[in-house]
Image (cartoon, rainbow, N blue to C red; front, side):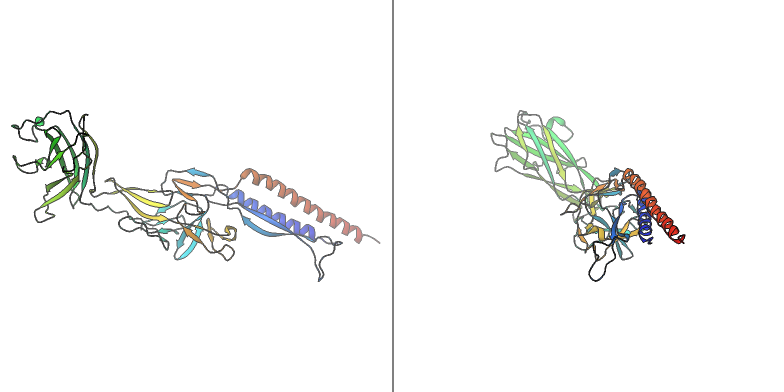
Length: 412
């Protein structure tokens, strides 16, 4: 009599219960993937194979495979929590050892690196000082937490509408920034010098005659030029209210600064006024822009769906500091589990295919979210009951074999 079939069934059922128990234990583990035991029957073979008259000799666990299906995504309060919606893995580096994970629970360490709970560093494409991401070989992502340097204003633009219905200015009344009746409309904009100090430029519009306007300016409350000087620009409009071909399209303002950034101790800011109009409606400003900004302190980070890590500063500026990469494999089930929600590349998995999130078959990244375990707890509990019954049934076959053996031994 052979006990092999029942014994192999007990071993297989026991390993199946181990797999189910591991799934249940990790049903609340972020980024964990469920496993399943896959079984194969066993037949005794000879040189010519097993004949039809031979029965099987048991069962074996052929493989324990992980199921890389998408887990549910839940939101969190941390912008550095990342969830992958789709295929792919985060690429981690720990002292040069590269591993892969679906667990996106990251935080900044004291050196500015994005790390997981085990201290492994998240990798991605770096960005230069101007925020341009350089694709190529992934490196450990390090975020700069210092201030952003100021940028001096080099140009600006204004889009305004001048009221065609306005009365012509009295030629006997010269322009005076303190006299609101000497001009028909004004607007102001903040500009910055090379040290980030803010200066206010005000532009005043005065109707000289029909379809002709003059522009004056003041810097930090002081008129640019002396009283009695000609206007800084003159605008002429055609019958449709558009600038004529002979009209000025720009206005250049010289701004005195306390710290000299040029030989004259001034900065010069040209303003594009090519979109100025003269329609029969009230004076209005639809656009004010300039390209400078003051120094700013870091106020936080955000991560876009393509993995770009963007730093936000108190001066309203944003700067890309890198891009998280994702990695996929031809056969993810060939990856070797390392524990700690990490996997390693093997010959069975194939080489890693690295790219930006959203490119090709790679999924996108959702910031402030985490991918939960894909374990179906209800299904696992049902599988546990089934595995328990299988274990009991195999134990019963051993018991029956023992009874038959005992009967034979008792024959006289």
